[in-house]
Image (cartoon, rainbow, N blue to C red; front, side, top):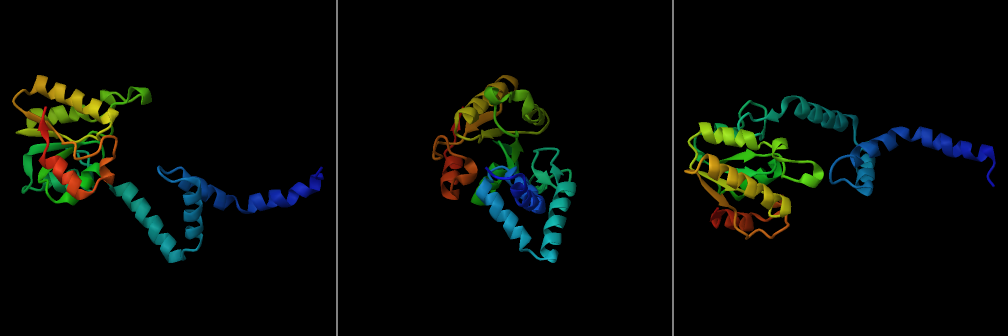
Length: 213
């Protein structure tokens, strides 16, 4: 049985490394970062120079303080309106509905879509307490009533939640704006996949071969 004094060195070591433990915990709290990756990132930060640390800190604070959501599509922007919505060369009569900014970026990488977007902020998931009111669907319907929209492309992820969300939005648009064409991206995208992980050629083909709903 260990003596009471044998615990002191361990306790001292824990106290001396608490800043590192807290740093690892902060990295581990980020989405997609597991314990090993969090530890690797923390060790990397410890080896960075003061100049590098300051640059990283400034970038985080600047992004947090200056980046906001576009008032039209909910894309990230330093201005009230993002560059895509403000671009007069885009086809503003076509809206591509996506779940998040990562999906928007995936479509932009194809360099083949020239319309605008609307980010709804996720998908309908009753088991996670996410219903239509928790998403930016009302804003989309509002846009359709104000802007001269010809087509809405539903590009939610091809999984159960994404399909349910697309079906809900499609019914809502058909009831409220029957003259607007509603289409769904084709299944060149594998069911259950995340759009940000799909290669650009497959994503372009899914967009090109979209079907009417």
